[in-house]
Image (cartoon, rainbow, N blue to C red; front, top):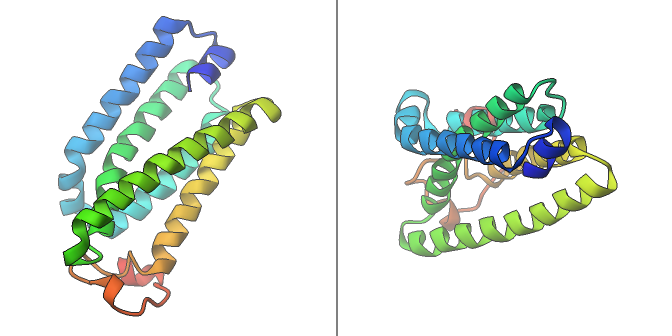
Length: 178
């Protein structure tokens, strides 16, 4: 984010710092409003909407014509991420009552490992393909893939009491989780 903002819009350290601060405020707003958003829209519908919106925003952010549009997009992306993390963790820890701690730990470990690998891939793409458009496309594809895995695995088909791990999981249609 910082490298791209610097190269694309000529940001200095101070401007990058403000952009990261703005993104952090967006994340805080998303995290704090997550439970209210779930009450309004339901966790399954909200999670899918957030994943699609994040894919769209990351896919398009490289084409931002002005710095303020890119900063606003990052603020929205991080707000959506603040909404998404509790939704995903809630879905995953609700898979089996007796394994909440294990599932929560495993979710965090996989998330951090994936962030590390994804950041490495994004760095390679940025350098080798000369810019942020490839990174945005990679991230968009990653979000769409994650959404597909959630839907096909059956995680989206039931709520916290569905006990998906103790039954055979069939492919969930988009209608099942809505």
